[in-house]
Image (tube, rainbow, N blue to C red; front, side, top):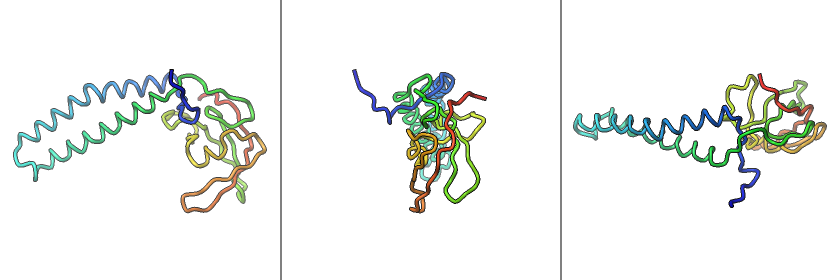
Length: 166
């Protein structure tokens, strides 16, 4: 039995898991066959050094193989269902409202895997700088995280409730 670290787990709904699995099945089966046929057809056109169609097909093949590896990793580390949640504590599957230091506006978002696209509100990954900083914090607590420019930003947790869907 292998032990999975909690920070490596991607929580997915059954719908998201099924969608990603179907994409993986298509890319690793018919998708690979289609791109191989495109490469072969372009190869038959002659000189590969000046063959734009061949190079485009090879680039597309690289993107497909990269996406296959990404999907395999996501699905390998996925747990289907609802992440354990406690009202008032920030975690995956929670709708979170934060106030940024020095700003009067509040921002509300779903803390979940980016693969949960289709949510009617913005989705922030628990692995993002903001998501990692607030994960496990309680309502009323503050957290700081680093911005891409190296500066630090502080937020206060205003609300954390289980996501109820659309």
